[in-house]
Figure (cartoon, rainbow, N blue to C red):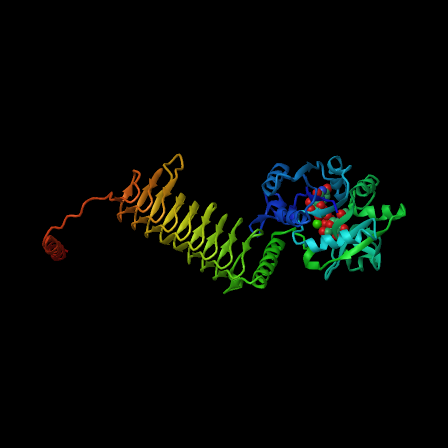
Amino acid sequence: MQVSFIVLAAGQGTRMNSDLPKVLHPLASAPLLHHALTAGQSLDPTHIVVVTGHGAEAVAKATRNFDDGVSCVVQEPQLGTAHAVAQAAPLLGDVAGEAIVLYADTPFIRPETLNAMLEARARHAVVVLGFHAKEPGRYGRLIAEGETLARITEWKDATEVERAITLCNSGVVCAEAKTLFSLIAEVGNANAAGEYYLTDIVEIARRRGLSAGVVLCDEAETLGINTRSQLAEAEAAFQARARAEALENGVTLTAPETVFFALDTHVGRDALIGPNVIFGPGVTVESGAEIKGFCHLEGCHISRGATVGPFARLRPGAELAEDVHVGNFVEIKNAILDEGVKVGHLSYIGDADVGEGTNIGAGTVTCNYDGVMKHRTRIGRHAFIGSDTMLVAPVVIGDGAMTGSGSVITEDVPAAAVALARARQVNKPDLATRLFERLRAVKASKHKDS
Ligand code: UD1
Ligand code: CA
């Protein structure tokens, strides 16, 4: 079945009290907008159109970061939800198949729910996603009999009797694209808000002899973000669900409540995640890898059998092959560590390639930045980098080579060679004793003076 999405994202979000457009506030390390886009994307749609308004440029940029296939249309001024959907007509008016309207500030709609709406389209021309609200507040009310919907009344326009109804409108609507735009063309703005209400399409459809229906979902699924407090609530809800899913999928979390996932985190079966691990965007952890406590991971890939941490930081472009070991207080950025590489302690490996089986000693630093440009360090297979080696990039260390501890390596090291780049050691017999005596005498004389 062909389906397209229209994602409404033009609103200002006044109650966030923010310079940032509401839909760009982060939820699970992704812009709020990406959550609705992810739900839509999972149905393999032919088109996704985002309706932007406030902060249009920034919102468009965030949609491109999600997928360049997503189009944006600008709604200016914002005259209501029907007016917002109408902006997509030039792009979707002639598109075959179904159209589903989503809200960019409603992050938790599940793909299963969207599929249930598409199925309900076999019975109804217009399908609305509804829910039973604990506190119906100012939600639009669904005037329905069983699955059949007569109309939707906005709170502002509702009578006391209608306001007592607890079946509410989530805002998500599904219809054949052609039908949707034709219904919207008929929506007026003679209501309490003076807005073009998307909700009016139900009554218009019924007048045309088309049928309208309700699909129900859980209230938690339609949680909309209007305030920072709701954003924090949503974060907690997301994390609770992500932790439960990870456990369900066979991931061990020693202290689930202390682990934070991102929208796009992938963790394989039998991976082990210790306490206080934070996943930023773009992390994949393969089956059987272990992330010990207090690690920060972002934009990285950790293969089977690798161990990371405790207290490690993997930044974008960190690629750990199978059985790599990254230990405590190690930072890896934009670097490929081949199979079995060990970086045990206190190191910075940035803009580097490290060959299979190489051991990187404690305190090693790839000096990748000259103050203006970044440079790459290439280390071969089965090399041994001595503790406290400074690798001043660009530099190449050959296969099976060694560097002496404390070396500052500025020139390439051939395969199988040892590079020593430090001052030669000199021992002065008995000098320490004489120095101690002299210093103690100085201290004693000072003591007498004061
Ligand atoms: C809307 C529904 C209401 C439903 C509620 C669920 C209408 C008329 N009412 O009310 O029945 O219970 O959502 O949350 O549809 N937007 C635009 N352009 C506009 C107006 C809105 O893009 O001109 C976007 C907003 O950014 C927001 C969404 O559409 O993401 C909903 O708009 P909002 O003004 O919050 O509608 P509600 O009054 O909450
Ligand atoms: Ca709203």
